[in-house]
Length: 330
Image (cartoon, rainbow, N blue to C red):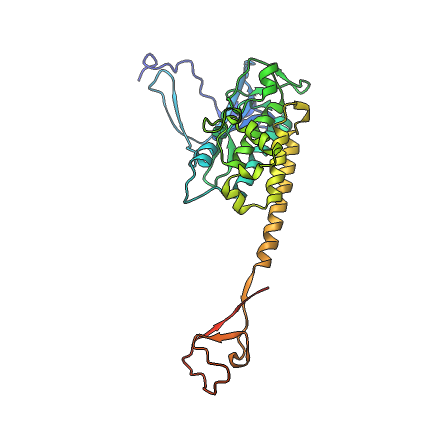
């Protein structure tokens, strides 16, 4: 294979030492984003060029094409949209799983907005960009539209970009993307998790075509439970559903100043999760069943036999008579 056959002559093979120097030893302050396949770091080469260095599990590559091909790890469980809207009955999405995934997404966005060395706005949060690993943990993917923002800046003025159904109306009208625009998109994902419905649906009426509008309208009309996913209704307590729904509603506020930050969203969801776990523990304790200790079945009124004798019978109970204990609740 000659360099004339493939377009790799301009590619540089970096040493680990080169990249460690460029990224300050892969310093966490250099993290630009964490996607489904790996972590992206901001780096500076010795010639002054600013680059992005992606660390992920590379299985191999092909240099026989004009554009080199990379082969990397496959995320086994697809994305959240597929799993949520094309549910596998063998492994349904439980209420606990939905709440955990919501917390994982919120936590990742909180990191991008507030913990990274410079704020990062994702700009295309949607359920198809949430990948699920082998343990169904959520990982945000596709940073193609993301932007790094200077710490002093409060917004990014740009050509409107995003996905219909998840797009923040305020951003659409002003072309100013803020961290609250990501919050709005997350709010739509949260309503998907609650309702099991798609962000855009032609089945719903024209005014309810957008899930965000349909969800807010249902809250205003006190018909929230009519649109909640039946599995959520079966597994979750209503007070917990209402708590998550109210949070989603705040994320969908049209006025960005009224929306919570992703830090506030994360903390609130974690608080709800603690309440859910506490409630589940108390319920399991209440429903614990135990067998009454057998001491002497003849003297215990809490036992009966499958060959029950008439009252006052003088017959004796034979040794082969089946004795069945009554179960009692603690």
